[in-house]
Length: 349
Image (cartoon, rainbow, N blue to C red; front, side):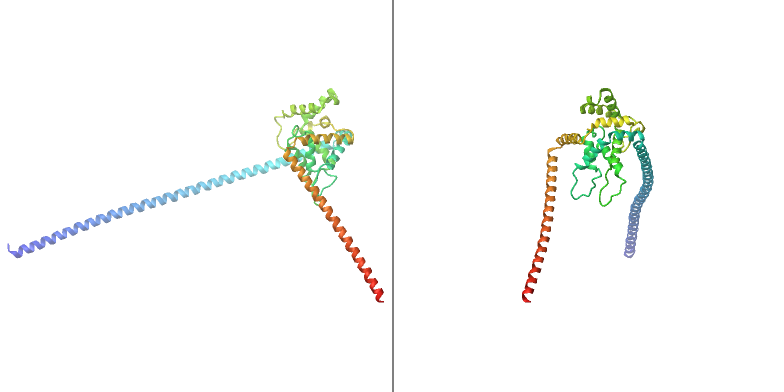
C-alpha cells in the first residue's frame, strides 16, 4: 500500500471517527433534552396538579361555606322566628296578666277593702312624694310617685329582698308607667290608684307569705305578731316558691288565687299606723334603720351631693336678688336724672 492510500484511509478513519463522535454527541444531547423536557413536563404536571387540587379545595371550601351560610341563615331565621313568637307570647301573657290584675283591682271586694285602708295608703303615698329628694332642675309633679320613691318604699318596708327581687320591684313600677306620655318634660310616675295597684301586684307575687301572715294574725291577733315574726314568715314561704312558677320579672303566678285575705296579709306585713303622725314616725324609723345599712363611702357621697345642690340653690337665689336689686337701682338713677334735667330747664327759663 502506497503512502497516498494510507493517508486517505487515515483521513477517512478520522472522518468516520469524527462522524461517530458527532452522532454520539447528538444522541447524548437528545437524551439530555428529552430528560430535561421530561423533568419540565413532570414539574409542570405537578404544578398544574397542585393548582388543580388547590382550585378543587377552594371550590369544596366555597361549597361548604355556602352550605354553612345556608344553615346559619336557617338557624338565624328559626331563632328570630322563635324570639318573635316568644315576644308575642310574652306580650299576650303580659296583656292577659294586666287585664286580670285590673279586673281584680276593680272588683267590688277589692274596692271595699281599699276603702277600709284608704287613709293609711294615702298617708303612705303622700309621705313618699313629700320626702323623696328630687333634683332642683328636674321637672316633676307633686301628685305622682316616682321610681326613686317607690324603690325607697319597697326597700324600707323590707319588701325587697324578703318578698321580691330588686328587678321584680322595678318591673312593677315599669309595668304601670311605661306607656305614659311625657308632658311638659315631666317624667311618668304613679298616680294614687296605680300605687294601690302596685300594692296589689306585690300581694300577688308574695301571695304565700301574705296568706300565711293573715292566718297567723287571725290566730294570734295583730298585736302579737311583730316585724321579726313577719320577716320569719316571709323567709319560710319565699324560700319555697312554686316549682311551676315562672321566674320572669313581670310574671304573676295564680292571680285568681289572690283574695282580700292576701291583701290584708300585705297590710299586716306593712303595719301602717292609722294617723299621719304615727305614719311619719314609723317611716322615719325605717328610713333611719335603712340608712345605717348604707356603706360609709356612699353616705359621704350622698351628703356631698346634697350640700353641693343646696349651695347651687343658694347661689342662684343670690344671683336673682342681685339682678333684681340692679334693675331697681338703674330705675331709680333714671328717675333721678330726669328730675335733674327738668330742674335745669326751669332755671334756663
